[in-house]
Length: 247
Image (cartoon, rainbow, N blue to C red):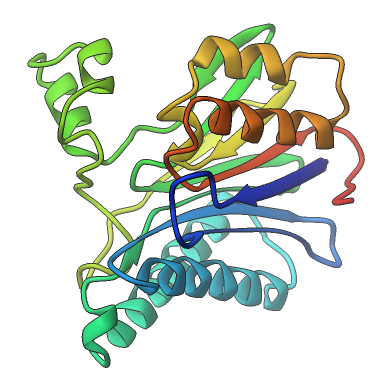
């Protein structure tokens, strides 16, 4: 599998509170994660960095995944550990109180692909030229959409569209969406809401299916976010089923 990622502060923020990681184990398994920190000051930056660092360390310590159950148990345990670390750290400093982060990612191992999600960062997949969102936001407006009280279009402009109902490090326990996805995708995209919150899915799809190489497509997506105003930090990882190359 080939993967490339990048993160950008955008045009309006003083700090980049996003973090991301792409790491491959000796056995050829791959982990790719994007975290979008929340909290005042530098606290969101601390939380997102703690999350990706812990996931990377635990992933490199895991010698091999045996099966679906092993992957899901590892994810549940590792993410709960990250949650505990962030939660405990937030109690030690008034500046970091209430910090947390979204956390969304992909594990590719044993020719299988698994995704996980906490918060409103997203994973998209392209299957036979169809662009599909593979995760569900844990947010106030998504709950309203599910209840039929808002349309998807109305949700994009709702004043509380950034209000999360789930995040890593905020509470003692964390809810994790975990799924094994169908193989045969052409491309997977992992991104923070600095991309999907400001750039249309049509434009994202056009860039992902362009003739540019993977690295160029990642930076084109970041540029699209900045051209839309650059209101937020933006992080993007693009993956395809080619040989692994992190450039």
